[in-house]
Image 1 (spheres, rainbow, N blue to C red):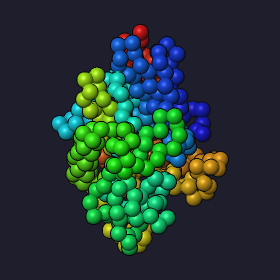
Image 2: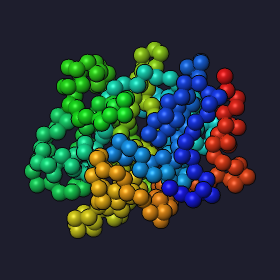
Image 3: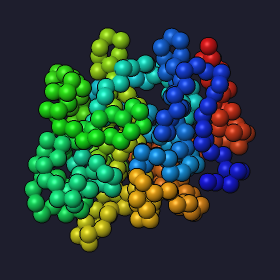
Image 4: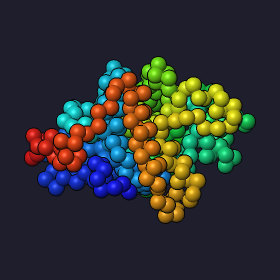
Amino acid sequence: MQPAAVNVLADATLPEFPNHYRGKVRDTYELPDGRLILIASDRLSAFDRILAVIPHKGQVLTQTARYWFEKTADICPNHVLEYPDPNVVVGRRLKILPVEIVVRDYLAGTTGTSVLTLYKQGQRNMYGHHLPDGLRDNQRLPKPIITPTSKAFDAGHDEPLTAQEIVTQGLLTAAQWDAVSAYALALFARGQTLAAQQGLILVDTKYEFGLDADGQIVLADEIHTPDSSRYWIADTYPAKFAAGERPNSFDKDFVRSWVAARCDPYVDPIPEIPAELIEGASKVYIEAFETITGQTFHPPAASDGPILERIRRNLAPYRP
């Protein structure tokens, strides 16, 4: 979807490493000692499918998550062990809990499980919460709510759940649900506070948790990245909301909204995404990283060659 000369990471297959699992965005390898190598590609996933490949996206995700893992380590233990490459994290192997935790503070979203989509369909009771009539698109909710979904390990669709269903179905114990709920709300509160200092609104986000070898609940995957979270530019919110428009954002609605306006993305073929939209999305990801973290983004050096070859060199010490 980009010219061949553009240095992107569409695939992170490394045959010399064992136990490869190719996710929507990340390629994962499980080492014999139990450590995991997680490589963030430049694939853009939405609507349970891959939409495009966005230059620099994988590096942005890894480095943004690194910023947040370090800023929240006092709240919740996480899986990170080290960062051998800008696109790579080496982490602890966890037993991933079968529930994805989504925290929302606004009536927003475009996917089939978003509160805005369900609300527009006439639903007022969702995820175990009751929302009042008369809410408008992108309005702030009375308080942050957790909207959990089943974790679709087989690449199927995530399904909405309530806290009661999670416990009665045996997906989590009551104690585990209480723990992950408390962790999620505390992480989200920290995220909103730090985002506000950067002129951003952290609108909603997802968290994944797992159990380590001792049964301890550990934060996994990523945290508060442009893929897992929706950010709005704070100073655009009042006027945009008053006009009934979506505030300026850093999240992947940039491409997702373009696709959703042209097809049913859960059913129809995805139309070819214009090169200028992909270039614009790349700039959005970089701007997001710099605004969220206050750090300068350093793109791959031309002297490093293709991204996958750089990753292969940096992972040589981990090769079994």
